[in-house]
Image: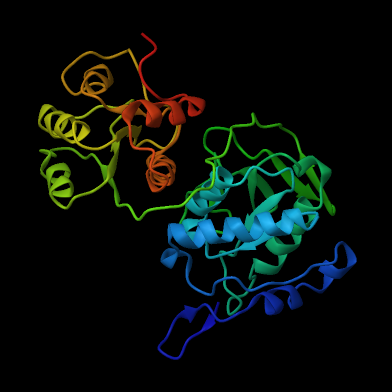
Length: 318
């Protein structure tokens, strides 16, 4: 990012410029810079990430030690999780960015890129899926969230905490992640997946409006452990009869409940109406996973539910 003619900062730095801003990189690794896209993180689409995943697979086939992806931080929690679901590599894939652009004092981009490089060449990062490195912390893509609009410490993992850190020039990975099979690459179709966050006083009109638009799937970020009012429950039941509907929580931590509450609009009621539990995936990540499934033609409720089982979701146990 650098100042634009109309005010504010805009994406102008290519990969070579980013690498040149960190002279210490040459001392720890031979870095080959490639410019893949030049756009704000908020402009990314699923097709961009799928094409990026293809490019990363090619680099892995060429024997690269690791890959670092730099992007705007707005959508890192979604794009990193999408890459994690699209790739099944032993080679480390690390996503990083900057919270302070180069025009500000204390710009953090160079330090984050240096730390990401140390993680990418670390043996401990191999086989860990996609990782996010910000502020000298290492986060798993499946857990990480952006929790602040502007702080250099904006990224955290409410469910797990960081799985590692960078200190004195060394990457420390203090946890191993369960391997979850990736969504296999395949010809894709354009789909539209809605994300609704339930709020006090909702009446289901927003759900029905999305259905009227012809969406292909829906994720609802419900209150608490997966609860809505009766009017929204009726709308979600109607939606689940037409498209896959995934039940997540708006809280951002914990998992969608399965068999605790039994009132109308509770998790038990919604699951009986055909919704699929997101487990401990939040609404944003549940939408990423559902979109990737639908883009590959996986539309049957049972198949969608199976894809959410590794995340503690799916259908009721019995």
